[in-house]
Length: 249
Image 1 (cartoon, rainbow, N blue to C red):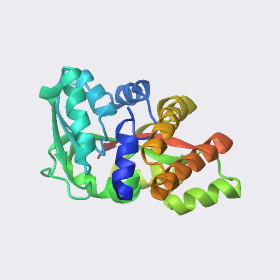
Image 2 (cartoon, one colour):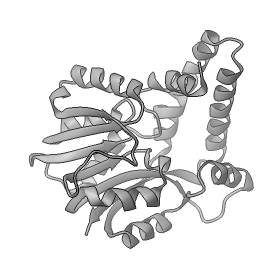
Image 3 (tube, one colour):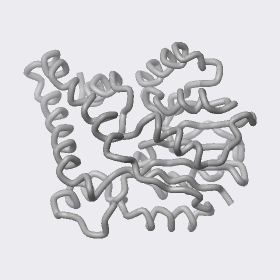
């Protein structure tokens, strides 16, 4: 197996592929002010195995297009949508988030939990804006500094992983520059990292390594994940995901 196949195997078993929670998804949705009874068109971009997609389908009168470039994740989402009784509201589409299959001004809501970093926050909000109807809404969670000064160790890690990481005010300014009006923001609490994402993933490490015993690539993947978890536990007061809610002008 190559590195991507190993990463897919490790993460597709998770309820989430990044920090978040059902409660945080519902809270972000409440901040949009969207009338849940009104028929709308929604895109969940970088949906993974569908934790947020299912909540959106349960909460909205919506046609939801779930986008992920990994078909393996979408297969899990399809099964979950059937089990949750919302399969009729969700269509899955495997593609890159920089090559989306939408007509201009066709979406009432774009949702991107923990995924926009794949193409960069500014690139994403700029290029996705054309798909949103005037007055439509964007919700995106993005790795965000919580303090203006950080210890060198955590600064160096995230500068290498995602140079676009910044404080919330910089993300708000980018939204305004690109034709949005920010209408809400909150920080994901620590349970969204530990209870919902890191601890469940950590519990899968032993079986994953046993299955791939002697595989240096699998061992390196787990070592990298453990390093990230250790850094978060050490420096959690300095970094989290910010959830940004904005309206297209």
